[in-house]
Image 1 (cartoon, rainbow, N blue to C red):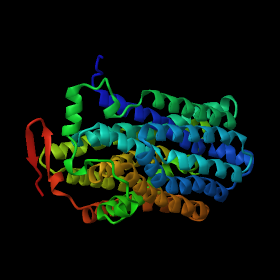
Image 2 (cartoon, helix red, strand yellow; image 1 turned 30 degrees about the horizontal axis):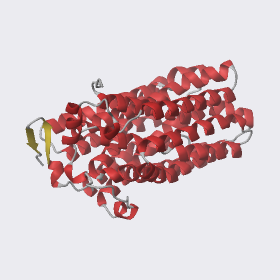
Image 3 (cartoon, rainbow, N blue to C red; image 1 turned 90 degrees about the horizontal axis):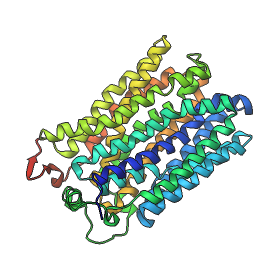
Image 4 (spheres, rainbow, N blue to C red; image 1 turned 180 degrees about the vertical axis):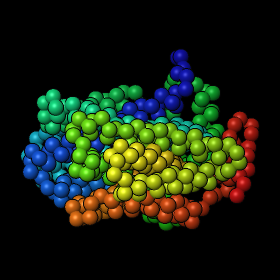
Length: 432
């Protein structure tokens, strides 16, 4: 049987494709929000509860979906989840109140929570450690690319027909994506067209201390006892409010503060997500740059996160600028910065936990992230009408700097991370 060249990159691009649809579906509400709120008579506070229903379900769902995928298997587990969120997205069209929207958003959020655990697990089993950050960045590009596609697609659907039509189209795409995943995804052990050379590259590049000789039962308690988990979890708790704000509140900020029309939203809202794509891609290469120059694997990740945190501080200037295009630029830099550091935080789950518990650990860290999103969203919903958006952008400028400190203080490197084979036959020892 003829082998497929660069098989591992085919697999991560498949994950990227599913992630694009995942984020297109969830971002659709933010784009359609001004139209839906006007059509159904929904207030800002009620809208914040709709968004919170998704965030709460997503928060609870991440560790459960991660455990589900670790237990039932990556292929079938992710297929089931994609089918559920596709149908839930289509069900948005049947709702006529904020309570109905909150219900379907909850179902959607719980099932969509599988995306990042599934993506990181794919990168972990398919890539050697030195390429894992780049692979995670590639699939994580789907988060911002999907969010970037949502404004023009959803706006066009609304203008062409209705907001209900927009959700039917978005949900149908998810159902199609689920079947594409089911028919094309393979794990390395089942990939008959994987060459012996590439299989050896993957296996020899994995951390030996994270391999399990036999299938072990995943222990949530064991993960919670590790300070490394809390380092990742706290940094993600502080980082993810930025992504929630960009996804769910920036379109409303553009309409109410910058006075953009629906057509101008379609023209400009995608720009932060384009920059976020570049941040995803840059993340792995920045970390690899330091790794290739003698910095240990974990420290190279921490340095990259810190760079992103410093860049993110510029988003605080949105609170004082008056030019709408400068505001779009600053939010776009925020999108780049967030995905630069967020990709690192997700990748660390694959660097620090055993293969049989990666999806569970990443899901639990994701629950921390979305707890941050949920709390921040509720504060925006309750106080934005009183104090405006400015103070919230200032808060986002500070959060990631604290998150970077948490990574440096809490995460403890193991010796195996300090001596890594970067190229065939070449070993570099990390400098501290």
